[in-house]
Length: 584
Image (cartoon, rainbow, N blue to C red; front, top):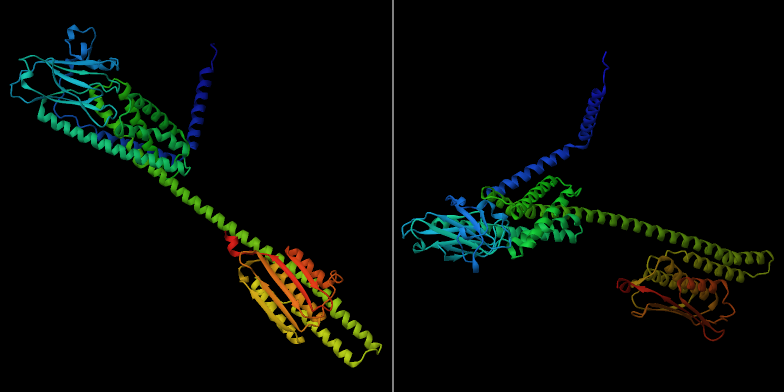
């Protein structure tokens, strides 16, 4: 028996497994959204190219002259035409692009032209890329016209010349066109010999086509450049817009300025590279219009490839007119629609980003305000705790001590009724002072001073002391945190308490000064009492508390008093900030 070989079956199974794996991968990678985008891309690209083909150059309706009778030869001396039989190099019309572009060439057309002398005969060459002169039977008949538009395959010159009838010689005539060079690789694809009036109408239609293409191209190029510049300024898709910039510049160069042919070639090549880069960039346009933009990119790429074929290839007349239409118009929708559409999408995305940033900033501001409020609340809580401790100390050391001493003297029967009455009255005054010290001082300095003014007048009136209140400046402009305001209030309160308890004064003067733009608040508390030795009591509870509070404020605190010398004076100088200075 012959052995059975399993190699072929194994290879078939491996191939089937590979195909199955590829199908599974493709089905998982291709999404419905991707299929929809590709379909839109294809439809837009095809529609753009069809529109460009429909707007192809309006070549003359009359048939082109027989180009098989045209040959290329090297002109004679001084650029004069020569007979083809005397030339060392002769090429048929179909091989004209094999001629070196930098060399002059002579297109020689010999045909039987035996027309009546009154016949209106003319020559029309719609596309040329360099200076040219028309000769009829070796006699100069006219020069090429310089135009203001040099699109792909069109050049910037044309020949439209009426041939005088006396230039013709019987049944056989020669028509020669001597072209200085062909750096733009335009050649002479079309040559018409016929009725001049008809050719002139055809030339007018072609001139109108050139004008429309030029102006439309300029408008689209400027619009595309502005869109790219704005997008780059906004820092949106910079790589994509830089890749597409050569397309706008190339279209601008076609219609706006006469640039060297080498620059046009560089522009075509850089545009192709830029369009390929743009097509390769991922996430270039993520919106629903992404398929439209991709289609316009593809149409512009095919248009630029058509321009390259006209610039480098040997395109014969039969296909040139279609390529000329695509090369001149296929990229314009990208510049006029695609780039502004992309910019609009970027602006909308930027607006969304700005809205999100504003929302985030508002949220952060809200959080900051909450944190600030929490900090203020903590400061108030600490201030309340400190005041509670002070209140306990005042109750224990002041009223508590007085009541304990009075109770002991009563038990020992060593006090008179009048002294009891005096001690109780003094205790009530101290109790009232302590109770007043618990008042809410307000959230700004002006409110705190107003509260102190009211309480001080009540306290001084109760013990028969006159109050003189002098205040200059608008204290509502001063910015102080609640703890600082409370410290100022407590210093004044301590001065009031000491005056009521110990000064035996008849009058008290409180002066508050706020010089403009000085950044200082001056508070003076003066009485006409008996005075005291300031150095001897500087470490006492009352003055010590005042000095500590002044230190917390960063303020200057002075006590001026001499026993028996007509009262005492307390000075408090507080550095402050006004609302105007904080806004500068």
